[in-house]
Image (cartoon, rainbow, N blue to C red; front, side, top):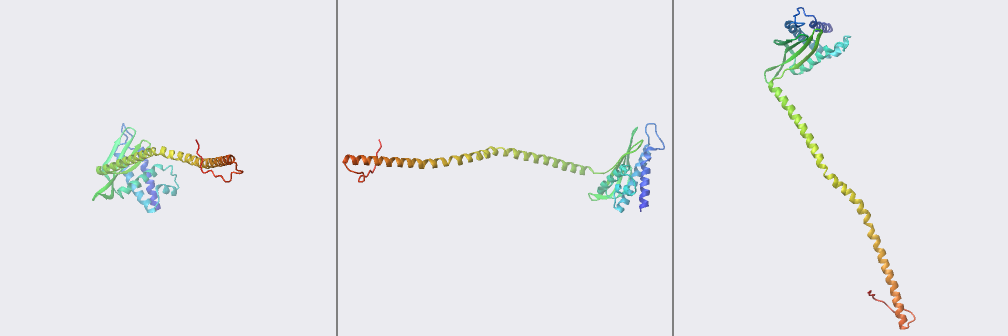
Length: 255
């Protein structure tokens, strides 16, 4: 099985080198449409075979490159292509075949863009089979990028767009409601501050009247006692009595 993996990887490397060595060059491009189409479809089938073998071993493409003694940095394009395939295969399932009639090729002076249709074994909406598109961009120096994406019909795209819109708008409204609640709380802050300011003033002014009252009462009582003694002594002297013990002053009227 390991020999098969090595052979498969070697074939993949050979295919990756085909883009830079077209056999029949046209006047305005480095590769013909037929060559670009054959290269893209062959690469697609090779990636499918390599993915199945890696699944048997239970390793990723980067781990396999390290096990084979290669440098992951040198095989960055291979690793990215396989990772893209694995991610897309979660939607379209296992590789069934290449839909060669639907392959699209666009050639310019310095670039070739090949879109290969892939048939998967997963179904959706009852009996429809899921498909994917592998896009391969080639230049005169070799492969520039390889990516695989699952194909969705219009209803699925609209559903996803609606969900994204609802999620985005819901997040915005939730943030706006939170901000409005915070702003409304600002009205209560001055009232709370006033309550904290009033409490210390009440505790300081309350004891003052309680201390002043006993002093006034004592002073009034002391003044009345002295006045009573003076009045009693004056009355006793006017009557010719020796002492004022027999006299009682019952009330004093001030004018």
